[in-house]
Amino acid sequence: MHLPVINTGDLVLRPIEDKDAAALFRLFSDDAVTKYMDIDSFANISEATHIIRFFRESQEREEGLRWAISFAWRGELIGTCGYHRISKTHFKAEIGYDLLPEYWGKGVMKEAVSHMLQYGFNEMQFNRIEAFVDPENLASSQLLSRLGFQYEGFLRDAFFEKGKFVNAQLYSLLRREYDRESIF
Figure 1 (tube, rainbow, N blue to C red):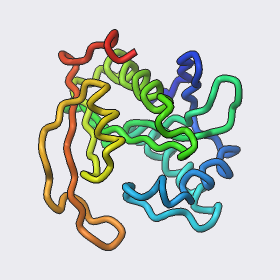
Figure 2 (figure 1 turned 135 degrees about the vertical axis):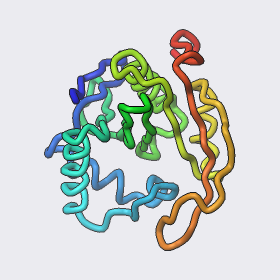
Figure 3 (figure 1 turned 135 degrees about the horizontal axis):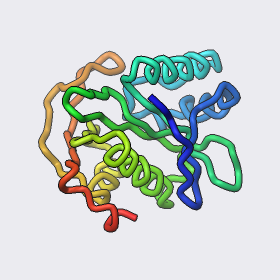
């Protein structure tokens, strides 16, 4: 699977590289970033190098794609976004995304995910894109709603994360519902 560079105007979505280890460590060592994720906050930079390898291996197995998010005028990684649990058989994938807190609420993730969705529907030929969200993560739920995702339901004890069972909300966007003009 090919991971293209996507220029959105203000942002660049690009492959994550070894040189991004320090920036990834900064991102994933922040408890605010990992609060609703299925990973613990990173304690050392070796965890960042391991996740870079994981992203590459996932892409090689055609199970996932992960982009670094950076500003066009500055190449440093400020977040990531991508697809995982890709099912070519069922023409679907799950999305995930994260961003340094200083950029929250500024439209960065909406811009990044909008272009990621365009690539997923147009180039990868997905019919369905899903997102699982912690019910307390209101910002993520609001982002998905603004992007046209539909709330499908509440999943009790859906995942075991950080030593406990957690609930999840399921959102989805179907190709026939995708309206590129309304999200850009």
